[in-house]
Image (cartoon, rainbow over all chains, first blue to last red; front, side, top):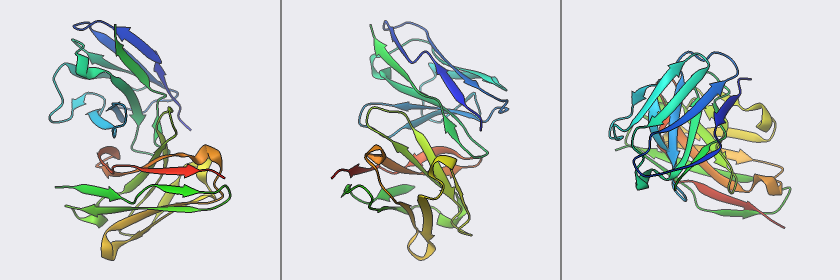
Length: 107
Length: 118
């Protein structure tokens, strides 16, 4: 099975900072990679699919890149409402696997 | 609009089974795979499996093989997840999620808390 490894597991940054989260697949997954945001007590929210396609309604400060095994989620200017845990997910073929999550906090 | 409405919280004893439902509305139920994902307290997301509503075909994560059963009733547009031989580590929020195109998840149920406790 393909494993998804996210890093870092947590980070603290200041409002306005550029934040980067990485996700690595143990085998190539083309661009079948999604990113989700989950705030405490809430249902996960889709941010990005196909590695770089922004879901409608998601702020443009979020962006995704990568293909194959290495992927990145970037928040160009961190806002207080971005405090959450972020998960990558490999999809298309089973098993569909999530990364371990990255908790983003404000410094 | 698409809605996935799950059944309410459950408390079960170790060794028992639990069955969670997910009622879909606002779209053609048989047109999209339904997935189940769980999240233990303070932990990450864990994919459990999918069911193809038009055929009943299923695919389970190896971890849950033999313990999880996904079914559906197309007449009432409802998917079910049954987990047997419960242990305390099965305490979690269980989500249903509709698979989009290539099976990423935009629409999620509200989650069902299952607590396993003696």
